[in-house]
Image (cartoon, rainbow, N blue to C red):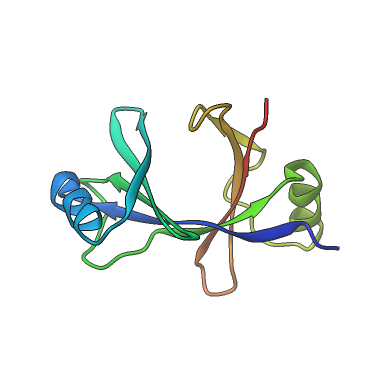
Length: 126
């Protein structure tokens, strides 16, 4: 069963949001979306097929930390059921939603075998 269709994005927390965003812009990444997540600034940057989610995290981020990577899907409900059936430890007990991008996103997170956070993300079409 192929529910996944590529890398969605890599999530990078930062204590200095403006310094981080300036860096990625200088490197040639294009700002494709700006959001506010409960008072925390979030920017999405893209260069070719690579998308970075740079977000403000003044409490938990460590230097050089990558918080998660996200796998893209077009079948979030089936993918959630499949991951749950495989027995992975879910971080989210249901499919979550955020009003990012034009029609929002649906997503859930689970732990990989090394306790890495894996997000499954679907950009909603409607």
